[in-house]
Amino acid sequence: MSRKPAGVRTEYIETETGNKVARKANLVGTQHIMLGGKTVIMADAMIRGDLARTAPTSSSSSSSGTAPGSNTAVFIGRYCFLSKGCCLRPRDASTRARHADDTPSAFTYMPLRLGDHVFVGESAIVQAAAIGSHVHVGKNVVIGEFAIIKDFVRVLDDTVIPANMVIPSFTVVAGQPARIVGEVPEGGHEAFELRELYRTVGNNPQPASV
Amino acid sequence: MSSSNKRQSVLPKVPSGPKAPVNFGSHVTIADSAILTGSHTINISSESVIHPRARLESTYGRITIGRRCIVHERTHVGAPSSDDKRGDFGVLTEDYVVVEVGSIIESGNTTIGEGCHIGPRVTIGKGAKLGKHCTITAKSIIQPGEVVPDYTVVYSNGLRRTDKRGLEILKAKAQARQIEILRRLISSNPAKFKD
Image (cartoon, rainbow over the protein chains, first blue to last red):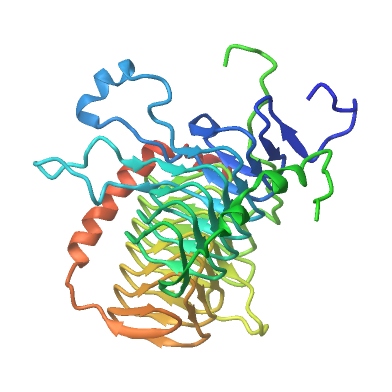
């Protein structure tokens, strides 16, 4: 930030931990969003941090004692890349988890967790419960509520992942609704590395090395 | 939080057209950054929830949102259609309708029946009529003028089937509960949209 030339409004805000957040990104409820560092959030990406966990009404008196950060809505790991127009939102669990007396349980909104090196393509909508590390989500993908994506998964463009689907590691999924169409080839892991991509955006972008 | 020079975290300004005349029912939850534009009236009935960045446009006709509806972010209700003919009204959604992220509902006598669930990134064409309790799954397209019977499920690139689960009452209950939660989470500012 200190190297920023005076009077020039930069396109990205670069934090001390190396996150690059576009000024035109729509982040709602920023206090509930946790970035692991070196994460790129491009313009028009939307993260719904306001849909955080809330304490149940029955024990709201004791909620003041909870640790800070316990109601974080979105966890994002290192070297994640959120492209233009994508949307990350935690899903409400009120229809699922409930106490014996049929009242919604403590966690009204399940936090959304992204691992490291997760690429989210343009205009993708992510409502998953968890995404592992080294996951590539293509353009215009819709990930349904409570879907779980494990490590090293490639989701091809225009896929619709139905609610509650669990995608095992090292698979390629596509289709509407999504099916497993293949496996990540032997030695295809390097393609998921996003360190290079991280360097090519920001206020001082470096050209991609070929 | 303690440092005074912390960057003020605000949503970027929303480009918007003329302010639409609005008519809210009681207990409407509408986020500050929702966009209500156009020249015709926008009616939002009681206990409905409008998420941030939802766009309701009444330029091409009146918009009516029923009771206990949820309109998610980045939706565009009352979008312009390809031909210019205008209907008697723009969009009418009955009670307990959910419109999920990024859906587009074109304007021009478009009717969404009670209890319909419109998934993420769906396009509903101009003049389409959805029956009661339909489920339109993600990225489906309903053609302009199409009539969709009650309890239809549209999935997987346009396949149809009939929903025989009989869950309408349960779904309505769950939705009421969800609205209860959303009301606490979304900072509502209906006064902003009134004159």
